[in-house]
Image (cartoon, rainbow, N blue to C red; front, side):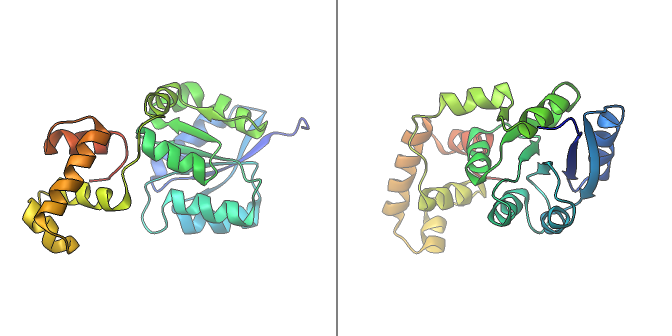
Length: 208
């Protein structure tokens, strides 16, 4: 690697966050911010145009979200180096992003202390995952994931739907819904619907 600074593209739908990143990096000689984008579609276009060394990518944005943008960018540029920026430390969401091709996962609460190290590590080809997120991933590495049907069920439970309503919406019997819930409870290590929703949201399995 040369001594030229790491060129960074910042992608987030909040201007204050983008501005904050610029301020945190403005005095550094080893990192330079070369562009910004406010959603996934802009990020894809900006990557093509600017060819940054590292992308800082928010996950939750209107339109094309961060996860879809990571997939699209990596499809065109397999060597793209992307760090996820998020307020969320759920292990499931982190695993999705890393499987999509992200090399880093950084909580926005840790920007002041970790941002530069994360950029430089990823620029050098190393992974950088916030320690709390890494711990969450490790603690659930042996868990069986929810199936697509089970995720649909728990999303409807989170919306306050009763078993009968879920059955009508998903074209299945109430007994089948109860069977899915039993499996969900086992996989999430919970005993009731409320706790299941709480755990599913905390781990990033569903959004509400």
